[in-house]
Image (cartoon, rainbow, N blue to C red; front, side):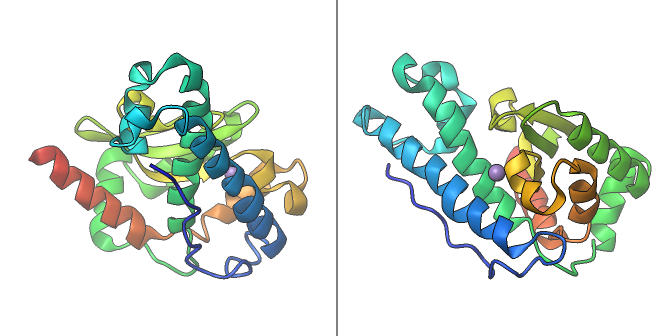
Amino acid sequence: MKYNLPKLPYAYDFLEPFIDAKTMEIHYTKHHQTYVDKLNEALEKHPELDEYEIEDLLADLNAVPEDIRTAVRNHGGGHLNHSLFWELLKKDVKISSAFSKVINKEFESFDKFKEEFTKAALSRFGSGWAWLVIHEDHLDVISTANQDSPLMEGKIPILGLDVWEHAYYLKHMSNRKAYVDGFWNVINWDKVEEIYNKEIKNKKK
Ligand code: MN3
């Protein structure tokens, strides 16, 4: 399968001042595009994989031919993670009372969830992601290194934050905390809840 850069659902300056237009433009047109290009380059070598979705390849990396396994992991993960990330960002979306209840049930309170997620984002050494995931029948906060997808450990991401320096360095320099603090203003809770509901239903099938 040949992958394309998905359409960004908003203008580059849409998330200002929390995520600046220049960072958004470079992140999307340069970084994400590179993951797409390199993923396609790798998959071209193995047309027999055409029938699989990238999610399936990442969930079972050992089944991917060794000569492209690292490329699929890094660039396939990069493509999938960023495609999700853009969808999870929007300004002025309040968390619904139904999804608040889910968070409170899993983490005691929203503040405790926020604290745990922030800790995951700040303590990830080097490049990676912080995630809220569905793991078996409950929610967990985890972080992954580089472009590793939670799917690699059998967990389904429903919220993610890119903590690579390329996501914040232009605006915040090395101050990852300022970027993570800003993130709470641009979470598209409607999308998070939509993914959660869809995945929970899939699990119950
Ligand atoms: Mn990124």
